[in-house]
Image (tube, rainbow, N blue to C red):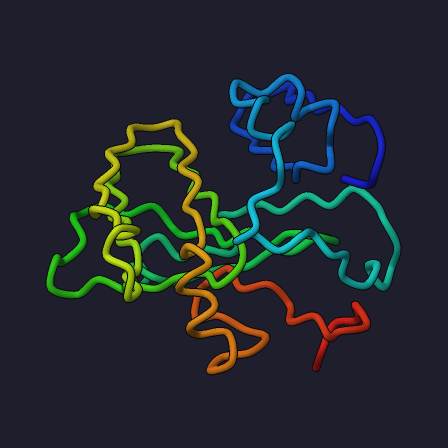
Length: 189
């Protein structure tokens, strides 16, 4: 959707998901967790930076996910959609349990991941990195989510980010990585 007020109506029914960043302050104020948007920003989360404007301008775009996902295809077949300041990674519905011996642990260096569940039950396993100060260690979390739900998965605490920032500048190993931003605020190539 282009910036500004908007609404959606489905005359024949169906499911629609609208995702907004915290910049939509009017909507953030209506959220169940509105208090999270009025407190100090998390120092482990980089501020939102705009990517270049769409080449063909701001306009309404509609994506029929059935055209992008092969329901009989592999379990992980990410399809990434992006707008000016966020990315959405859509996965096809899963019809069986994921092999516990074949998971994909990863982290996001400086941004939160919102994991949207539209159908089914999920367990998000969150492991916090350890530094040399054992008083800051946190136990693993195993968060069970039914659908519909949104789980916000935080980046590692700053102690970990500081340890790795020089080893992997400008990118993270993840399916929702942001476009690397150069010091002048332009998208890097």
